[in-house]
Length: 534
Image (cartoon, rainbow, N blue to C red; front, side):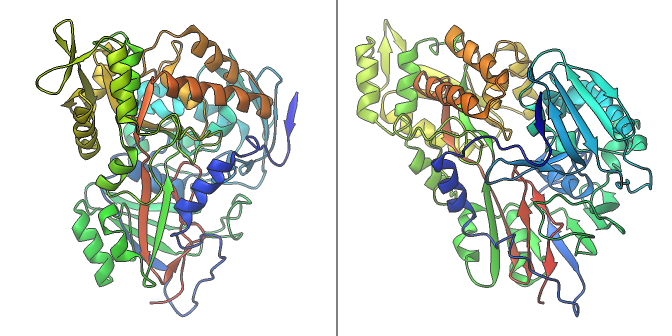
């Protein structure tokens, strides 16, 4: 039995992770500076969102905006340090993990209530997990963390065991996410539509109103006193009210921040970063954990079963230039098949280095000859590959231009989000252009394993499959890190995932608003946020 009563650390964090995290957070207002509210000023802010949330039930949504709001309303069993990967208590004060990673026993705090004044109990947690399974595809992110779930045994009001049919190494980290955030009994058993409109959590804020495509308002929760140790203070949140107007036009958000109409804005365009890098503003930046924006390949389609073609594609991409074209913050170019903010990240910058001469050499050694139109061909077939995507067209167009310079014809198939996931369901694609957010290296198993219900990359590699399964069954953090290192090297070298851009969450506030923080999934916490000046 593996026991954790205070903290579980992923592993000794690789140096590359620490450096990258510092580089990305250096421009942010230091969230842990323990700023205190100005008693002479109203503790209310206006925080402009980039899009309608659609559904603010954190167990159902996968929309970043909705998750940013849902984090304020919902607590999780555990919390995770975004810089070190350390897992610490939150709603659960202690936990034990079976040696085979198939059962997790938690002991809850006994003083937690939901905003409908009902108590947090083991039965409520069991109901949450059971209904996530019942939601099926409507709770795809939450359901992925519960893969293999067989039920929850309630031992007492404060003690319960979550059981899985197979080892689930990622569940502990999943228990830190808002996707597995705990809702009240009434919310967990409500209809999906009711949950989307007004989830009831135990968080430091409560929902006041949600008007679709207009605004969301949340208020401070009276009596809240169970924040995790990662937060900067104890007791109730400092802010009394947060109003989230939904402002889809980026220029209107930045203009409102400049004029003082908004105190903070979501998704500051990268191109405007330098404009707001002054003493009058705070910038908050953090890379999404998981798999960066990438080409995720299907080796059963088109020419992508040829490893030389895949390697030429990865060598033909100048990721630093793509980063500049996309206007992303300095240092955000990916250097592995995991982002730099993901626990277990291994720097593979040499493997992913831009090498156009190497790309052409690999192709010519594989029998490809340069055609008169500048595109390689073999046996009369041009070297044409297609990527299917529903966002980041600017990144794909930059990649398209770069690959053409090394003789590869990249075609873009831009589709709706529905058609994108429809293509995944049928396997009808050569490459997908997307990333996958998850704060654990098991994200590569989710993306690539033949047993994963969320599989995007289709590869036939027995060595890789064995390693993906082995890491999911390995409890020892150092041993697992060695396996994860090898997985990243194989995936990068054999070009099953070809990174293009590391997505960074970039927000801004005026200087008088301090203490916005990120959780380990790059979603914001407003619990420590204060108004210090007008």
